[in-house]
Length: 251
View (cartoon, rainbow, N blue to C red):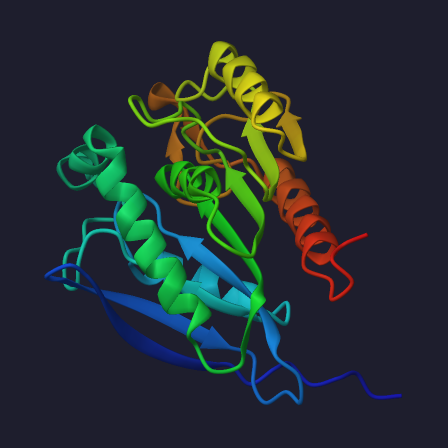
């Protein structure tokens, strides 16, 4: 038997708003289907919705999900994937309620996409996007079934009330990540437990920050690509989403 041909991906820039600000997301659809598909919302890293995030969205769509890469900076506001993007990220780290509003706006836009089953939603993110994935889970929007953080920033927002987290949370963490030291790992374990979340932690020995990014070659800053941790974390994510997003509710 001949192998199945790869899916023909359909891509589209999607404008949406939060208040007076316009954002531009990137939607990727695996192609025609007789049934609605589960959707993975993808949160970008600190440089914004650039080509690496768009290519990653296409990779998620290749798994059979509709993928919507949201935008938390604003249409046309993009940084340098290999540069210092502190000036873009810091205002949102300082105002996590503003970040939450923008995440929820992107989540709502994803649920409105044609072909999406709004009852089967997940979020995934990398680095700053990992924090975004966790903050969306903390916001507990309707029908968010799963959240996945790859080498994410783990500390919770200050000043926001803690509530129940219904999404199934997967933390994919490099044990030698200087951005998320062991104390932060223990703290989020307590937080997720107290929030009643169904959570898992996969810690990869010797892996550092940005272990899934092939361009991460800065050991002096603790940013190093790790192909083994990259492959293991991708497999773990696939299993987690397949379980959480099944039509039977993952049980």
